[in-house]
Length: 67
Image (cartoon, rainbow, N blue to C red):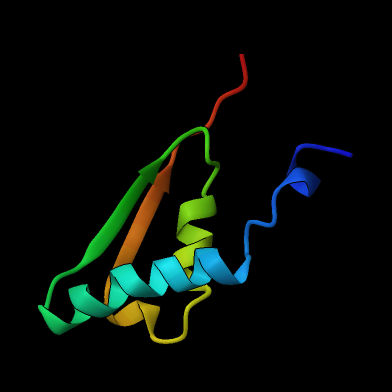
C-alpha cells in the first residue's frame, strides 16, 4: 500500500471539516489562502472540492521539494 492509499484524504469528515471552516469565513466576508509544502497542495484540493469554495478560497502556493 503506498502512502496515498493509507489515508482517505477526501473523506466525508475532511470535507465536512473544510465546509465548517469555509462557511463562517464566507458569512464574515473573509477570505482564505493557503501556503503548503509537505502537503503538496492537498489542503487546497480539499477546500476546492467544496461547492462554492471560490467565494472564500482565493488560492494557494505550494512549494515542494524532495531531499
